[in-house]
Length: 192
Image (cartoon, rainbow, N blue to C red; front, top):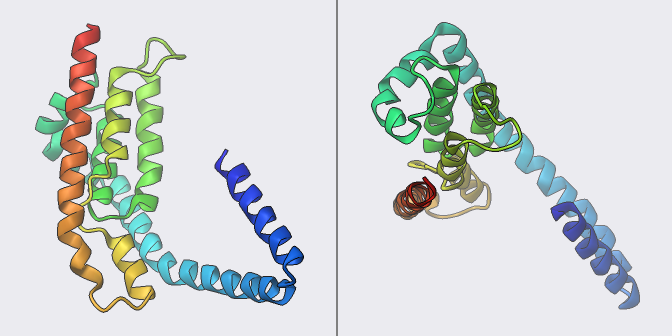
């Protein structure tokens, strides 16, 4: 759906530019925007590659299981239907840890793997479990302590103080996480 919205906006912009006689401005903007987008990707790619590599090493070395065991007291309260030792808990813990560092793109594969593992223990394959919904709420609230991606974008854009976003990000993620998890708990409790 979002692709359609962006497509329509681009087409309207191009048509307006053609009608108003700004063909040269359209051509210049396409070239400049393409270069800016590619530069941004190339500058942010090393951060994502490093985190993805570190998380792969952590997964293969067994560190993810240790992280899951460290987070287990909290995760067992949030996800009581997932048995201890299940791979889903390790992936959830990894997703949360990477999200805490503000690297949502690097956390996505762990979120997908967590959902896949939770689907394996799901009795009703066509319905999301309570654990899946809780994880989605937690992941959507963006548990972020250090918004690395936003700081990188602010640095790339020439911000004088790119790290001043940290405190507001912590406050926002705390409010969103507590609010989302509370609402999830209340709705789940009401339906039982």
